[in-house]
Length: 211
Image 1: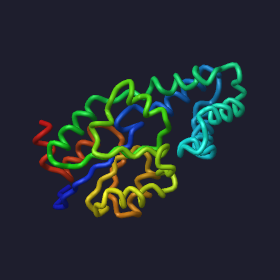
Image 2: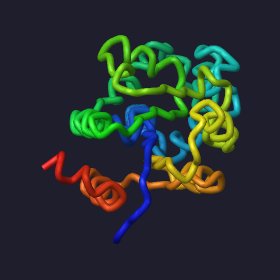
Image 3: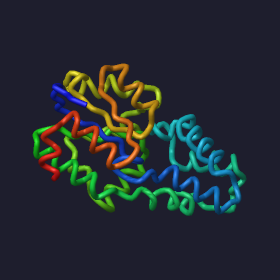
Image 4: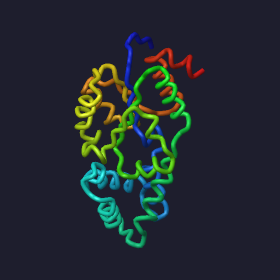
């Protein structure tokens, strides 16, 4: 793959890219402990996350857990027990931080764009990483999310950058598709090696710096 296009902004998703996907893994563990179908639990929890408005800061965390526990009859578990299963699985991948440092040293702006709640802020307090990004856009604070695409228009206005100069790295194909509707180049994250290979194709100088 050859590329003559210059990109000035790289946007990264958090869970599943910068860090392990703590929400999915946490819900799978909850399902396992409770003898439930992991796929059903993950899908239901995701629906509640968005339908309740919690992902966009429209309602409190307790409302999310209340609906979740009601859905699966988990009243014997406290909110704290359940949230811990999720939060402790958002483990930041050290190599992604190295990649961000290299990008910034190449005068490329690095943006965090995530559908997350207040949980990511707690993670940042425990292990600071926000300061590595030029901008941090969290659905919980913006009141908009990638899930319906509304967030992209606002972010483009804030950045003031031609969408054709931006690459989004995300582990959800839906988000990639929505971003590409705005002219943003998307890379679907599947593995470290695949991501780096694609980034090197679009940013050849990056490979030399990371060697």
